Image 1 (tube, rainbow, N blue to C red):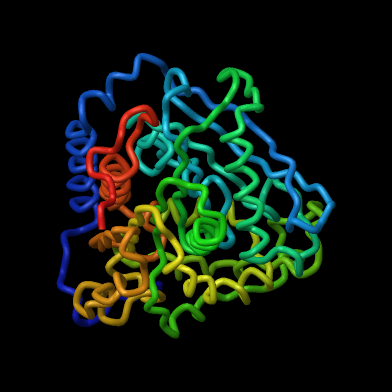
Image 2 (image 1 turned 45 degrees about the vertical axis):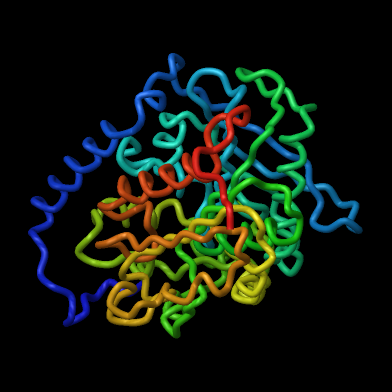
Length: 367
């Protein structure tokens, strides 16, 4: 997650040349999407939604979780992907507000024929902020479980889309959001696939490189009445989520302007969630950046073979697939290789989960 370059990393082209090459690659990848993914006759539509939830089965206190539901054309007969961002991010991680055509996973996924529900997790952004000690990985997972059930029950009517009844739901997580996805899928078993990014069972000391301080001390949250116990990154330190020179400095600036919070309880309950992966019984993809030094040993994920043992942490019926995204650090969506990350996620989703709930996926998991 550091921005320095290891002495073992080979030299790469200059930033302008690298950016141009990657832009060309992104256009090529878009052209290679199956023709049916580009044939959706409708334009992109998004609708703000809110879900009433509780933090645990025995807690009657109701909070609201904000999300943005997006689809191109009709939302019916489409798999819905629920996107879960990481610590100190919001739903914007999956629909980046700068050069969205390049950095927005939501736009790629909807073009490929999926619907995307992009959430501000509980305690983040436009969602309610419960007392900090109640916002854990477990309570996050219970919240997501209620949202999955709300989508499946068919009682929700969303302006612009009509009645929503999800026959197939997949979770797509990043970093701490991946840990929430693990906890939800392992505990409730109510989703059809799980894509995990920015996480692995190789947890290194570099995870502690992130610098936090109380959110109420940061000008970004002035006047927002953030409860005590919520933290954010110290100003000027978010470069820890990137690896130089494989990102645009303007992206990092936008990141700083839009940073969000995390609770101490989330941080304390995050890594233990990795022990639950063996209880997931649907297809799983795990993808990390080659230079994500928080979840890969040095000098890189490829060179260290850090993902070689991952299959042993999952059940056979997860049919685990692992991918290493080259020239990327922790925040896969925010590096120049973002289009390759998106293509990797959608290729797996097409094969293992499928876009249309009425059609079996072409490569179902058969352990």
